[in-house]
Image (cartoon, rainbow, N blue to C red):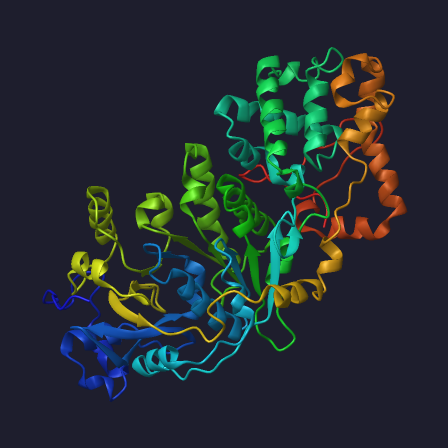
Length: 552
């Protein structure tokens, strides 16, 4: 790291700690250089905190100056950034295992497939021992209670699926790469399905409804609210067909994943670490990044307000965050911003993980109070521009950050977090601690055993294809396929069958009281009621993302 630094101006700038805080630092740390002492004083918290590492100053590591982040402040969101190979993944692992130990559940998006080791004890060695000694860490090999998931069951893990209805038109439009006009038309299709009680469970359900609404029998259904042009419907149908041809139908269906599973606490009081494997679908970035946003939006729906709690209910690590923001509309970005801003009061902390802060829109970046910035590269003019932009996002500092950020080693980072009072701490170059869990993936056989032995495996492993919109519409046409809808029954018969979906669903619920109890108990649907027979039911309540929950 760089030896260059600027003389701090006491009492000025967000990055300078007042000297009055110095007595809180240990007696051994009091012997530190004055500038280092002021930085260390900014991290001398009295309440529970996570230990990140030790201060780097003038080329050396100062183990008596510990850099920490207050546990209650982890719902104020954060950013972990840095170039490839600088240690971001190990930083996530370090934070996750400490959160778990303090009873906080964690969600990790595992894009590269190397985070499964969080469930197993780490392996001691010379490098781990040397790092622990440098940062005054009492290292002990230990793993965390963990659950492993796979998007749509592609890869090793318990399948995570969503129904088309709950995913909603806004997120689905981003996955299908629809333009704003096409997105609005898709919203009308969802509105029609909601009010008619047609459950869109999988892709074939949505195709069937679109085909009906553009047929002679159904094209008048949307006239009063804008209509659906044949050209737009054609684009949507072609997008759905291409989407399914790429093998993506498995991501939508039932049983739908209950995001409440992410909030589980193990019997020993530790938080469960939920690892979603994305390595098998990393070539479909639009899909997995949007699915991560669905998980977050669904949590936002269901969780009650808790205000400022003594610890988060969940900390959610959103890896490859730039993929979510790429080519996003202004309305979509606004929805993300509002969700991130409001979910804090529900006890959920969100950490975006990406290469540079410029990957995250300014309105979102401004809400990320905790920052861990690993090394950046400056090999090209674009790299240099990104470096300068990154430096400007930090509080005033005693370091020459431009030089420092290009000279950090693996496992080192520039840190600033929110203090217990909510103020930014001084910028601190930090040598990070070593994770105590396995720094690498689990053995494939061991991972398979962990997945199949989970209590959740029996609940989600087997896909279910129950009667929904496709089957209802097909029955109304005498069993003909969706492409033969024009030759089916007359308009009145089809409308009666569509409207009768609510009555059919009511009969099903009477036969399955446990399902009714689950639905009624869901906070998303306490106010939801539907009429039956041929009357139009109330429309599903949808969030800012257009997502909704039907079944639990």
